[in-house]
Image 1 (cartoon, rainbow, N blue to C red):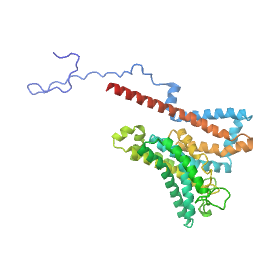
Image 2: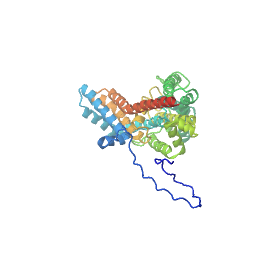
Image 3: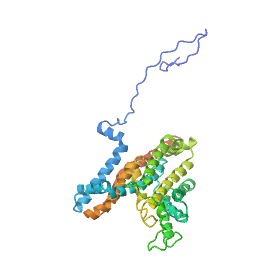
Image 4: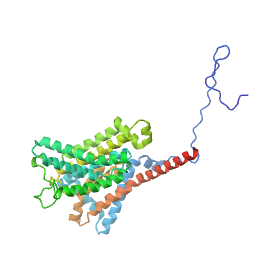
Length: 399
């Protein structure tokens, strides 16, 4: 006896006479019912904030950082509104301040990209500082060793050397990750310290030291090979802007970009689809190292005293982490983030010399911004790991 609750088959065989049977009427569509207990999607202002969190979170982080900074400035006995006004006036509305802002923005875009690209692959490159230093010292070595070359050739060769040295330094972490499973955070931290010690030896009585100077430094770049600014525009800024656009295009429009982002979303699914996670890791880290090395090269070629010396990197490599997280890993987002951080760095001395405010307040602002903007990333990572663990446990019990 046929089950009355069982729906008829769509394709019924022909009857005994060979004529096809009459097709049964289609069953009525079943309305989609939301899963019981699932919260409805947020609406109103909360829904808007959730849908646009990629923009809202960085803005709120910056606003909260400046609010806390205002409390610190007020505690020193100064008007925070006037202090912020002077900070940005000095950074954007004076010729020297605007030049300093754009000069700091240039390497910041590059080190921001050096952190943003590995983030797309699920890697956290915090070795931009060491990679920048490696690129700068490599460019200084080539610029001095081949100083008799024609000027255009010398500049190009120095830039290529900076790219290669930065890529090489980052590739060490990539190889440790792919061959030995060493976490990139640990390896890049160690490589930062190794770069500092090695370069200090090279310029402090080592083979690259300029012994005519009283402080540790390399030889200066030839005067005619220095990239002097065009008014308030440093040479490296258009290069950094073009590279940010190219990286964004590569990630969205090319097969390589698709593979990198697929590895970042799910390494196991990427491997099952035939995408090499080893190749993606090495390419991402080497590219990021090359960009950071270019930042160090530009610091050498376009910033006085046009020589590599201790402190040339400053905090640029670590500011790149703030910029990449503030941009939410978006290559184009590193541009406004770098301009903001560059303006704060360029205007910080005016807080001390003109108003008497401790310039470390800028470091506090950037640190708070980094903390606020990284909290969603940390929470997402924790919950993702928690979800993965629960799924693994459920699968093992079900098996």
